[in-house]
Image 1 (tube, rainbow, N blue to C red):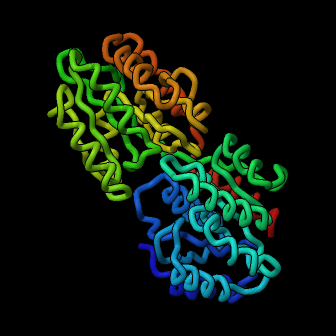
Image 2 (image 1 turned 30 degrees about the vertical axis):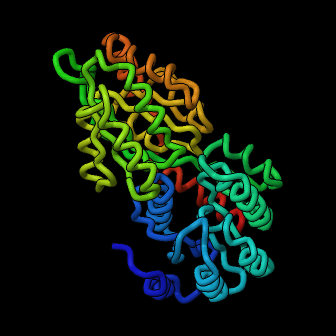
Length: 373
């Protein structure tokens, strides 16, 4: 069980002979609760765990408040945490906070070695008004330009960060790892029962649930059921609208909203699914695509952002983001062409054997951190 940041730091100083500036020691700043089931937090947790397994000492500090929109109290508390770090410390900060605390970053740049971990640029979130988008862009650009190193989770995000004024030489790509899964032999869509579709994504505008429902609305003549797994609390108004939409017409009785679930329940959803679908309008990586591939599921997703490169060749179909008609056609093909579905499932199973694990990816991150240290 993860404990509070100060207790964790105290325990680890004993293990590291009290040296706060060891070459293999970092302070890791996490905005909010990293047990929240999102890809970004999963990446943070698993990298820390693997770094520790590799002999690193990691002091984790959980920053309070709502990020990336901290109020003055949250920024004050964050500034106090940063001020408590020793001169010369190697500090890794999740981009959800780093990009929104430019003033704190700049104040301590002369004495700290900042490493920004960018999962998804803040200003590229779907649904922002132009004023908010511009404010996030300016603040995040300023913060990232102050970092000694920027780590991104995909090659496509490199271009986004370069556009914010960060030299490409200061950016390293460390993609997520994947846990190996026991693959179910002979996976294919079922002939006599409804095809079980699985979408794993927090309900926000960027994840494209509305597009998925529009696509499925035109497939009422086929037997299917959609299971959505992901928090409904990030954007409650949107979640309510989508749930209401799914209770109308041919969608009624076919769409389930499970909300956030624990890992055991999530693995059960993967095991029971026939097809995986992620209709995102943009992704910094899209870890759930690799998770689906690891389970041998054929995938239907978009070409948005890093997704254009995340899905292994031969493991699924891709369509333009936001195009409900194209998404409908792709889903319809897999529901009605069992040979194609079996072929893509076999492609996913083959690709699953080549996905890198978390320890391997953490070793790449460790090399980057040692370079900064």
